[in-house]
Length: 150
Image (tube, rainbow, N blue to C red; front, side, top):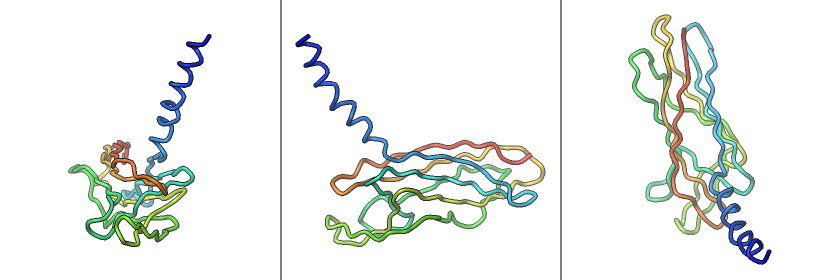
């Protein structure tokens, strides 16, 4: 019994740490807005107390959120990725800078046009860094792959 309790005490911190390592949950979807135009929606659900940074941050500070769409000859990317969320400005003393970030949730939206009546897939990555008041986790890259068109 004594060994069981000691093992449990050693395992609990590992399990708690594993839960902290994923404070951002991503969902990906596409929405048809006209005959051949779609909006790719990349939504981040952010755990309480954590934040991710906007796409544009001052140089030599934190890692911004970067959305990359893989090249596809059947798709034309229209404009830049838009951010939909409540932008917060947070002063980071480590960088002596006020940095734009999002808490709770944010959606990134990219319009794409499918050439012709083709059915294809839109692939890409989201690279982001998540921080709380005490720490930043290493940047993470999430892949997405959605059917589109047709």
